[in-house]
Length: 280
Image (cartoon, rainbow, N blue to C red):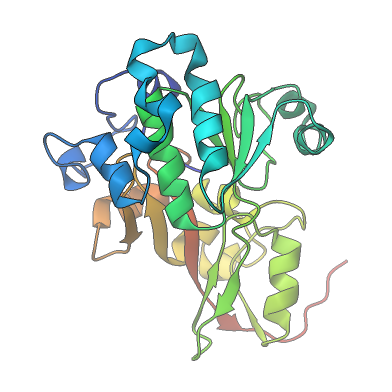
């Protein structure tokens, strides 16, 4: 299922600053100051637009070239991995979606960030070039375009794959592309569990952001009820930690609100001790 973005495809194509596509009590200016400059934000990420000829001349070019320029610019940045359209690894990626509808969508390129900062850079490049993007976590959503985009940039989070249990074993940090089966196997080594999905190959991110029914739901609520914090990339490239105290309204919205408020690059989930379980 797709992760979350703070602006819609149509807004990504607009020169106007993005706005929240769902109602929230979190004001936009909490994340983006008046007079915000995408160029300056990219420079803070270490990306000098004037040093990338195609980006620098974008205002003089046809908008049809926007995604070509955006993908090429990401590809030449050090440490960034971009799959262009057509090669075998691109075809293998698009064909690996769980639903056939998703596999039929052909993005201009596939970007595989390895850090939240790279995700932030991709959002800013997309915004600067006006090339739309979609974000792929587990890729399990059933409708076309839910975590892929025709002719745009698919940001695939498969390289964000860390699982880190806190020293006190009271919580665990998990990346968005981790599958529940893989996650449970790691947690089992430490004698703890989380409230999570019931199908092994479903991704962590989509289930949590959509609410998340679990085998533990009757005792401990849904998966989204057990999130302690979200690491989130906003439309202005900010990387923030969303908790009950730091951004209470946004925190509430992310717990079941779906793919509307930013790109989640890390979850902190509450853990609890668990012994043997039987089913059948």
